[in-house]
Length: 176
Image (cartoon, rainbow, N blue to C red; front, side, top):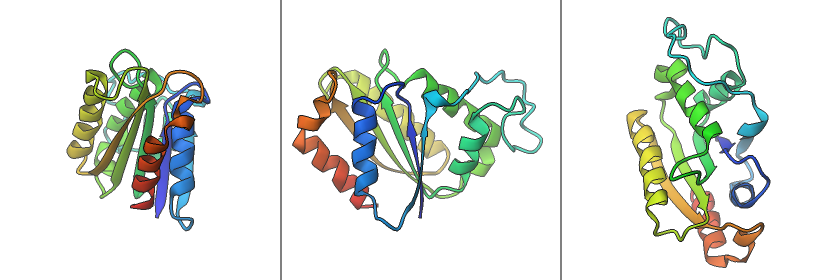
């Protein structure tokens, strides 16, 4: 099984730690590729439709194309994002917008897990909005949206003291 982990956080904070916990809990036989999206140069989609004839990625050749090729061949995709103003991070959104450039090639069966880390309590609407957005994208692409894990963690290392959340992350990863 091939797993692609997408880290939409610019820091090595709680989102990154949640993804670390997730990765450590995966079956050891899985092939895991992780992308810290802020280390990639991903430009905004220009809606030029240059990608549509062959759907081989963005014709402007930014950092998204390598990631998109990994997603196409993945069995499991893990989205990890901090909450930025009631939504996913900008870098995560830039990558998702580039899905258009390989749209029909992404529709192979995949499992999806999403982790969103924010300052507010997990019953806040921002988590629901993010979960619904990623679930809707998954449904559109005919992916199996396995789990959405909201995490309330603002200060550095806040997640480290949340044994129940760590257990939830480990359980979802182990169940794949």
